[in-house]
Length: 326
Image 1 (cartoon, one colour):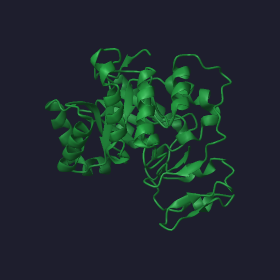
Image 2 (cartoon, rainbow, N blue to C red):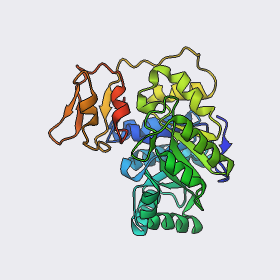
Image 3 (spheres, rainbow, N blue to C red):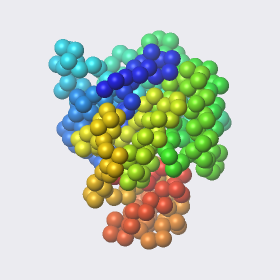
Image 4 (tube, rainbow, N blue to C red):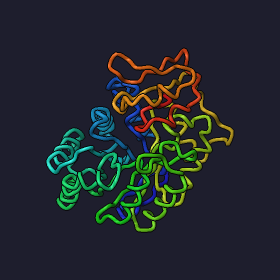
C-alpha cells in the first residue's frame, strides 16, 4: 500500500490505519491470540499505522503481533509499523509515566506519535499544560518522534493551528458530522473541514477518526470513506478493525478494489455502549423511542438488542461517543 508523509513529521503512513480499540476489553474484548492475529493480519495486508491509547489497554495485542512478526521485520520482508498512542494525563509526571509505559510495553525506544488524548477546549488544554510540556521534552530527548492533539472539538482543532509544537492533529470527521463538538454543543462538519485545511496548510499532519461514525455509517461504507479520504488535508483515516473481514474491506477500498455499491454485512452487528466512555448522563435513554436503552446495575447505559431497531439516532445525543455499532 502506498504511503504519504504526515505533514512535516517525515513519518510516512498508509492512507488507512488500524484503530486497535475495537479489539480491546472495552469493546469486542478479543483474547490475546485473537486480537494479536487481527493486528498481525492488518500489517501483513500492508496497513502500516496502528492507533492505540493508554486507557484502551491494548498494548499486549500489539506486542504479541510484533513478536509473531519478528522474523519478517528482521528480514525486511515487512516494514515496522508506525505507532501512535495517546494519554489522558493532566500533569508532567502522569504523561511521563504514560510514555514510559508505552515504550516498555511495546519494547520500543521511540514512539512515532504520542498525543494528548481527548482535549475538550482551550481551558482543558491549559489545565494539561504540564502534560504538554512533558511531550515536548520527550520529543527533544528522542523518546517520541512527533507529538500532537487528539480531539472531537472544532474549537480545539482550530487552537491546534496556533499552538507551537503541534506536529499531528487527530480529529473526528465524517460526512454526516456525527459527534463533532463545539463548546457544550455540536458543530457542522464544514467547521471541522475548515480547521483541518488550516492545520494541513501549516504543515500539521492530520489523521481522521470516526469516518464510519462508530459503525453507524456502515450502510454508506464507500460514501463515508470516500468523503474522509478525499477531504483536503487528511493524510490517513483510522478505522476500528475487529476482524480479518474488516481489514479486507479497508484494504479493498483504499487500494481501489471495492465496487461503488458495496455494503458490508451488518447482520451480526449490534448497537453497543462502550462502558469506559459512558458519561451516565441518560441522554440516550431519554431519546430512544423504541425504549431499547436503559441503565444497568452500575448506572451505565445498556442496549436491549431485541428491542433496538438500529436507527442510530441515539448516537446524535451522546456527548462522549459511547454508542457504537459493532
